[in-house]
Length: 231
Length: 238
Image (cartoon, rainbow over all chains, first blue to last red; front, side):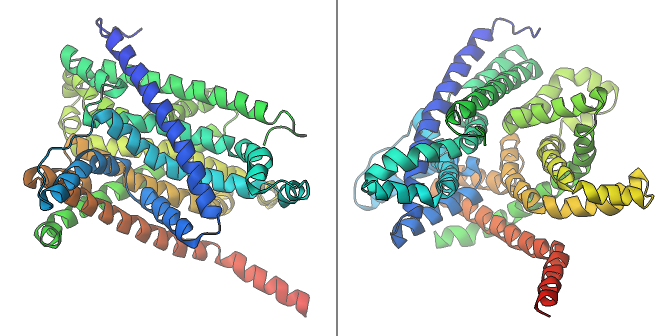
């Protein structure tokens, strides 16, 4: 096995932070994605145009550039605007918040596309049946449409999750002590970069494999009431 | 913002050239490597199937940043060995490690696209080629590849767009691509949002230009199908 020279605990602390950042960002991305998808599918032209611009920008700009923009750009922009109004103060975003905000912002756009596709997969008859039962729009959405949207969205969301976990490695660039950053610290201290980056790779691989297994289980569970079950 | 642009446009343009070079090189090497991997993944022999499968799993299951660090910094741990075989002069160079990692990474993703496309070629066409007495190599060259290329194109152009954005990570190991240029200009002039917004605009422009070009090629790849459709409907009408 890999000899971690007593730095295993540092990696373990990093793993915990990586998982926490991933879970919080994923929850945020699901909420942002759902709201954005509803706005894109809704009747308001303005709202769907805003969402269109949002997904277009996120798909065309690297995650690293967006992260640097949020972490370094936003505070200096706020300071400059404040200075032009005659205020003088220093704004600093902490890496944890900047990381989660950026990852949520990026993967919210991907989740939006997943939810939109899933919504369009719900047969028109389901909408009609809900209307015939006398459900108003909100009740129909909550009781009939969204549960089915989530089932159709599950494969896509699983994919978003796996890409998102890997994207959290980027937050190490702004010094958040997650797995990648701590592997870097240990690599420098022991002068064994290959050992520690390889260990970090194995941890990410384990998370990916566990996620694949969990996803298969979840899809089976979500399709339990459907003839022919799995999508 | 305007003076910022006029002052630094040259630097960003040279960064864009680097970004395009790294994208083109890694996509080229990646695609060349992806084909044999895709064929190996389709093999019924375990000794052929598993090495390719583990390769794909490793490069798709770990972050690109970790792979870059593993190769760029990690190679230092084997410096005496690499020096002995004369490879150290390459591994100490950021550009070499960057192109190597990007190529290995995109090869894993591309091979999955190619594999899906090869599997999507209708079985009847392969059987027809066999019936005509084509060898395995001829079948690959005249039937499977042309058909798979058209099927893989939309997904593959997506991969190229991802790769274009992924090259931004090479700035972390000091390569002066668009992101690298932006980071230096930002910290030197204390112009963070100007620099990163400009970088974002450069990427957006290049990405949507690539998508536009890819759509054109896609129409050409499917031209014979469109023509067949038109002929078919004319026949029905006549």
